[in-house]
Image 1 (spheres, rainbow, N blue to C red):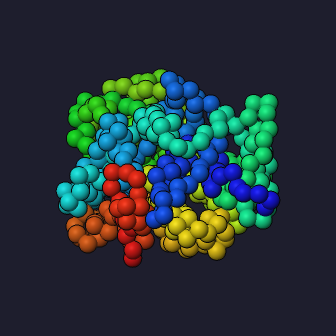
Image 2 (image 1 turned 135 degrees about the horizontal axis):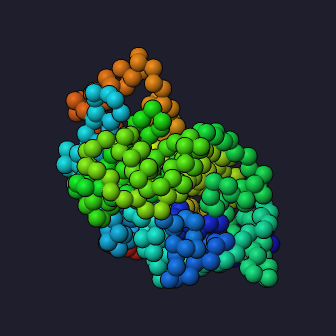
Image 3 (image 1 turned 60 degrees about the horizontal axis):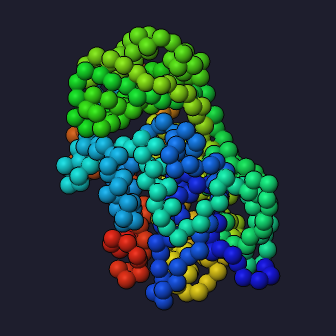
Length: 431
């Protein structure tokens, strides 16, 4: 590449993953005081007052953050603000409709303040975008990358902003523009997709009894559902998996019909369901990129792996990817290396491979396992739930995975106190 790079890192996509990665990278300081020059390119305008109405990443849905994700945001100095929008999950109740067994998981058994947290995406977006606006990260918005050409030492990018075009050079291009990534397609990176022939119905619902900070995972013959506690003790975020046809009906039927069907499938643990808000339908697919690395290119977030939402692991896995990549980039920057070289990036993929494979397999198979109604399989599932509930070692292993604290999971950045500008240093768990 002729001349110096304009940026160390250019991130295509300013949603939850792109914003979080930018903030992780921006706060890095190498031992000799070097910082990273980061640009985020976002195609959707982000007016400060109406985040929810403009950004598909920060829409009316809710996100379940694992305890491990809290650790990462805490180390970034963002958790105090995020906690204002967060509702703690202190217990998780897992059950199958029509079956005798269930499992109840408790944060206190792990000596944690919570197993996870629920944030409405609008609140998460408000904090992340505010932090970006007050950081040294540059933001091109609305803008798109229309060309990406490999050159010696980096990538040459063509940036389209309104009617204007400009070319920029970067050592590392991060593709984080969603499951239907146009940039991934432009680069010729293939992806595999599995259509679940299902849709997720997403809505906020109200009920008679207090949720007491319990998250419910309920498996039914029509598909799994999750109820995630919100700040109002009698309100929760519902994610209900159905066939596309059934989902369409649930989104268009009258409120009493919807609540009656929900009551039949969920039961009366929360008393009577009393109201439902706006209902949205999202088709479900498992999408995995066939390449996550090229020289000077990393594919991340839903562009790399878009998961079934039943286990709530998609964004948490992506955030752990961000933490691990940041660790690798800091190490290379400290040694004055080109951070986009393939030899530098390969350890990132090697370190995250186990976590990604384990999490993708779990998210993909758990819904399929509970979809079969045959009695022998139902009996095995009941035995499994009973075992999780009664065996402490098995329960702890299950909880650690759900919380992003399992073996091989990135918990932050390998650094020292004087190498991180922030509230505290970030540590990494090494297996």
